[in-house]
Image 1 (spheres, rainbow, N blue to C red):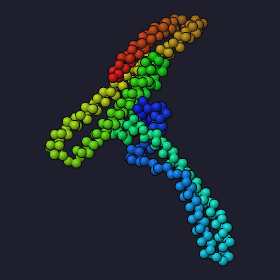
Image 2: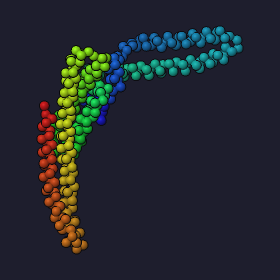
Image 3: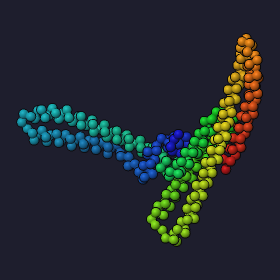
Image 4: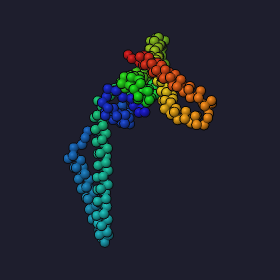
Amino acid sequence: MADVVVDPGVPEDDAQLIKESERLLIRMRRGWVPDPQPSRVSGKTGRVAMTVITLIALTLLLVGAGGPRTGGLLVLGLIAVPILLVAFLRGDLDEDEEMTVDREVYEQLRWYEGRYVLPVDLDESSRRLLARARRAVATVTHSAVNVEGLLDDVRNAVMLPAQEWEIARLLAKLSALRTKHRETMSEGITPEVAAVAEPLARALDSSEDAVVARVEALERYAVNVAEAELAYRAHHQIEELRGRLHQYEELVSESGADGFAVPEIARLAEDADQLERALRRSVSSAHEAFRYLEP
């Protein structure tokens, strides 16, 4: 499960990029902006200048040394210069490539500020609430009854991401305000300030209660779906057993165990009917719970 929650209205490819770019998004939140892209000419000029400086330094070294060692130093210089140049150019290109990638990603991401929520945007209480909401959404989304279309899978595909995003968005705003409120209160306050701060603190609490109600509605829906899932699986297991019923009957007849097994086999059909009714009831209950999620 991705840590970044993205507005479902963001195009899918861009949403995936946002989810994979948490590190860069955090840097952007802290004010990071990539350096302007250098021109090709200035980049080449810098590399040429470095080459010239290196060669001049080597020449001065050889001239200053003089004597019989000059030949050896020249050979050493001829070996060292290419190695230094390759190392320099390779490091320069790697750095340019990394900066180019970050710059391109930055250009895409900067348009979506306000349409994603990072874990760092949430305080501890909000992170726990969001985790509960996301578990409920995952329970419904990955259930067989949803995948098989027994629920309103199309509406689930739209409504559940919208609910998850709205919960994350509200929790991010709540966390930011709550953090600022606590910082202000920690500085020490006068009775006049306390009189103003108290109703504001209650507003924060009531906002959290409203988000908790949303999360609990999601969880109730998930519980109903989980019950439908159990009934669905049991129904399929019974149907598989019924499909092999003639084999059981044949075996019972051949083995002479009719008196022992026949009542059990007869009850199989009854169980199947009961499970089918239970499945219909549980799916109906899930649909009813879903109604409470609608705006």
